[in-house]
Image 1: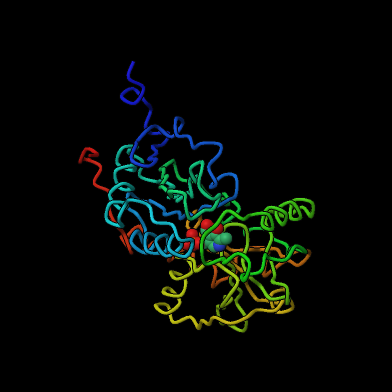
Image 2: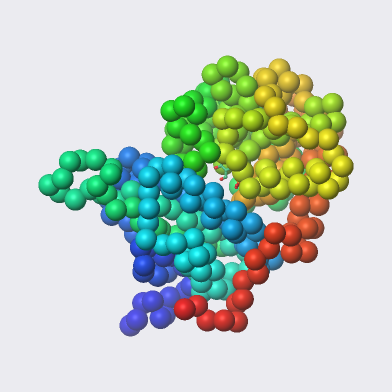
Length: 308
Ligand code: PLP
């Protein structure tokens, strides 16, 4: 039996260093430094309504992350773009979560044990769409806390290089669970807002949508929020947000690829507004998905064309 021929591609398709396989068969070596040292960078792009969103921006951010980590896999940006499109075509999925990783690999035996001697390579996959928070949670507003765990310093691990150093974020998620909440926002060592596990954070303060200038990934969805604010005439700013300002904000919301714009209705013991998404958060969320449906920043997937 030809496993690849008979595979159920609708569950997902993967690409590892030149080979394509069903996602369930995709494996990386256990000795890879991508796994053993978290020496890996990645990006995630969404497909919704049959189109990629901001595909070229995601690839550009991924390339910059790889360059920062001195990783140079064999694929060009144009090749990577085609690989991702072909993976989605193969699955036939109109709503997909598409990940691209660059792993360090492992230095060969007999040379100094140093990352410079490894050969980084690409692993990518497309699987059915994943929501970071359910549609019900988003509609009623997510319940969050401010974590006691601070975000790892950007001087140690640069948050603008998308990474899996998730120790602080994971710890914060357990703090949230213990507090009966669903997620947690992390502050930096000086007590200013950074980001949360898998998303950027925004506060609405005196009618202005604000998000921190440092300590967080430069999110593609965050850029989209600022574009929408511009278009809708909503005042917006990028500036530090103190813990006290966050606790007192009129509205709070989060942004990420796997969820879009996600309102918050509780912060610790505080109930925001009516225990429902605030008006600015709700308008941004609604407009975001409406524009997505209309082809905003879209790269449509041609499902009729067989993958190469
Ligand atoms: N911050 C972190 C830590 C993330 O992991 C993510 C996305 O996975 C984001 C922010 C949001 O980035 P984007 O909107 O580009 O998905």
